[in-house]
Amino acid sequence: KGWAAYIAGDPFRAYQVKNQWNLKHVVANLLGLLIEQPLVQVDAPAWVEVTLMRQEAEGRTLVHLVNQHGNRPVDRNYYCLEQPLPVRDITVRLRCASQPSRVTLEPEGIEPVWEYQEGVLTVRVPQVVIHTNIAVE
Image (cartoon, rainbow, N blue to C red; front, top):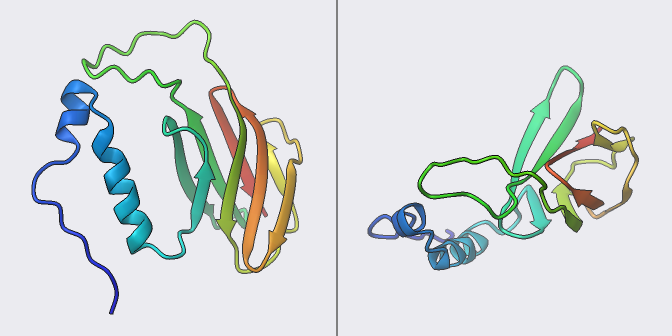
């Protein structure tokens, strides 16, 4: 009752060793088939990392967005980047059981443009320079 996928081999080895990115799109498409209703979806370049976190004590959900600047050297020489290029106009969709009472971009505390329809919160993030956090209460 559902989908299953099996990849024989290590699909990310070429990505780790030679920065060969082609297979990550194949894996992303497979995951799209397997997970009908993901908890979070983000329209952004592939180098924007997304982490979903629930803070029970505070009663809020956090969506962390980290801009890796497209520079992730495979030789583990993590050099300092003098001036990161911001990623602009990101759309984040988050499944929520009920309409949030408050949505902010942290650490600035700015209320972004957002809407809630049919169990999905859609947030427009103007830009992520290095890190932005969407706090949903």
